[in-house]
Length: 257
Image (cartoon, rainbow, N blue to C red):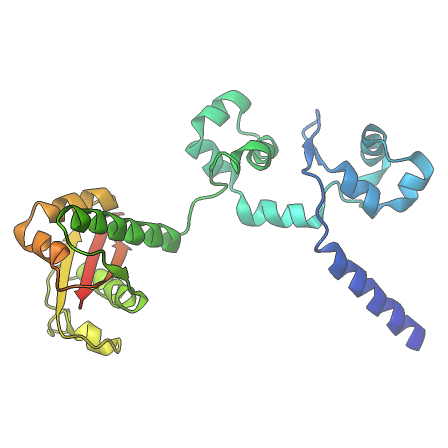
């Protein structure tokens, strides 16, 4: 029993060690199979001992025998990456130039993504709603600070606490578009609820805009909203973004000293 336990522990250590091994990128073979010769050689030393490490020979072994024997053509890490990082349908729709040139075979598209797409900044799958919101919120901050710089006002600092409060308000204005909250309290009560102390505060809200540029343009062309953005008495900003059921944006800026 003791010997069996020691062997199991050694196998587990080996498997954990393999998790940190970097293999070459898999290659798309003519029959559409994604194959990693380096991984196949390291995972199957018996095959290498008998046939050598030539990539073509190893692939022929996989086709003739390995697949039926349950041997993997690529690292389990590549399988995980494919499942977690890649959505072929999204990739084809988001990159019509690639689909027009290569078609819509998922393996072909994935091979393009790992070889070229990542380096070109293409996304393997649709960004999450939270990622979209985070990007929009920081874009609003950047544009606001450009406007403040042009007006001679100091840049606003990002506040995670204000952003959390603004996120609450963004969800609320999707139901009630008002500086009065759904519970009847004024908009600044959210600051107290989030434990934020302040001497001066301001709120801008908007609904329906599809980008940070669009909402900032609308705010800058409204006297009251523009005054909040350029107010030299504010030093912190938090931005909240919420997409309603129709995909329209609900936007909130919360400012404090």
